[in-house]
Image (cartoon, rainbow over all chains, first blue to last red):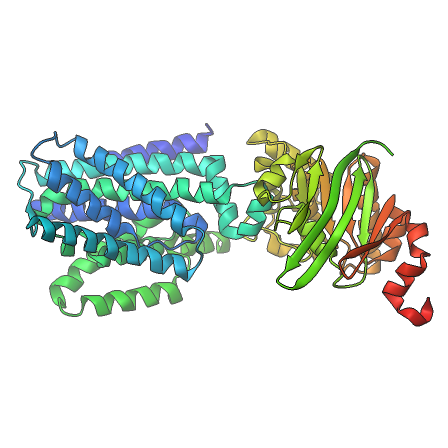
Length: 307
Length: 243
């Protein structure tokens, strides 16, 4: 490892410790905010691992997340809680692989629409199954506290960052960047583009399902309409783009300010949330095309720092 | 002629009712530079695209050292040892010059990774006269330099057969002589090259043999001097009156 990598590792470990200690020094209000931020940080960072280099915008987060919440809803009484995120991750990865095999031959807007439709389809299937069996929603009453949910998310976050760092150095990560630049060239260079894309698409699928499983106790009552809400997919995309997908730290730089902003919006203008979300999206695309990462790189270049 | 490294047999490609390549066969020997020439629309690029796996022939076989290439996807063809450049240069715009070349080294026929790939890419860029441009974004390059980077990327996998699709097109006279010298140096180090080309000077000075195509069919084969004086070839290029 280079000295620079060692320095970055120490900084990352210190920040992680600072995050992990939030329940100790923060108020309950900040713990709640912290849990929401941790959730979006994990979702947006894992989303960017795939969608950042390939430029394939996935709106499937809600599908995987919802599957995760239902894993907990169905399993929390019979299985130890720690096993549920693992099972959810496994199911999420398999579902992502299946979706990937079908959709990753699609490009551009077709892929976007399909992933959006996926969440809706899974929701309809779950609703149908519930109707057949006479259920509506489920109560998830556990002894899991907010603080434990938060710690699970921070742990998962650390794992996602580590994984992202490893992928970034690997041939798979390099292959994905080449695919994002020019898929035809990628094929002619010897990259099995379908395999590379499916392999990496499984990461956000597994992670989002695990996050759903961890967060289910927070909702207490889960039903398809809330568990598979498409809003979640859009929020993740907007936060990741606000932060920028070019660097591993990009998405979280978008998650923190956006979660705070969202808190203000939902409190001050609860009826206009979608409108304001749309405006925020337009502003990001027009004013900050590369997100905070792009802005940071531009400033560094202008003021003579090292790129 | 030594044992052929690449054998095309009765290769045909139909796009709907259009026959772009019609029953074409030829061999390429190891260390040979073979030109595919012919008027516009004669099926040269289609031939290159079939060899490189961009699309499958409708009929016929293309063998590389006995291994069938026809119908294989491009990434498998690449791993078996065929590298190519594109008629319109295709670099990876968000990657630096050296990363573009490392991309060629990392996944193809002979794989290199990490420091080894970087070292190898540096060596190639130095050889092609791009030693100063390694860390530059590709958007900062001149036209001939983008072509050099693409060539370096193709060479980075150490291919058995290199396909150059009009690599010399669009160069000015000075650049052209540089470009021809560059390909000649590849030929001298023993590379097997198939080039599609319109520049006659390049064909005369570089090719051991040529295949001439017209309207999808092979109409002549031989040394450049032979085929360029062939009546059939002159008729294909210039029309009946001049033949």
